[in-house]
Length: 102
Image (cartoon, rainbow, N blue to C red; front, top):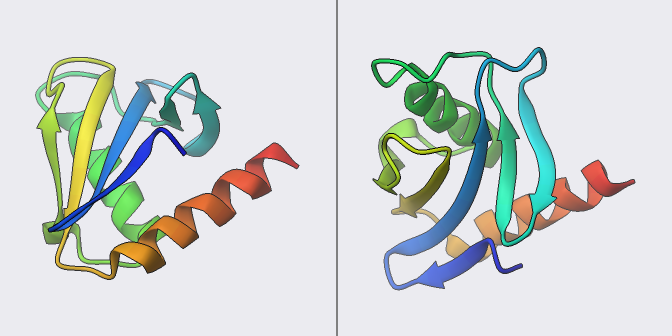
């Protein structure tokens, strides 16, 4: 799980975004990043907002707990999730990745 690291405040997730996709969701893992497909175009922060909303829904945590900490204008982003049970979040993501690989 190179895309995921546990930090004192929660978890850090390395993400590769595919904007303007026909599908929406976690696609799998590419290299050392979680690959996420989004409907939104990469303009005026739309894709970043959709990414945070999608992961908040997926991880069942408030969107205010997520933030983009690097790569605001890049497809490769680093996100942090604060104020939640980091082990539960890591387990949820791991289970989702296994489901997409099946």
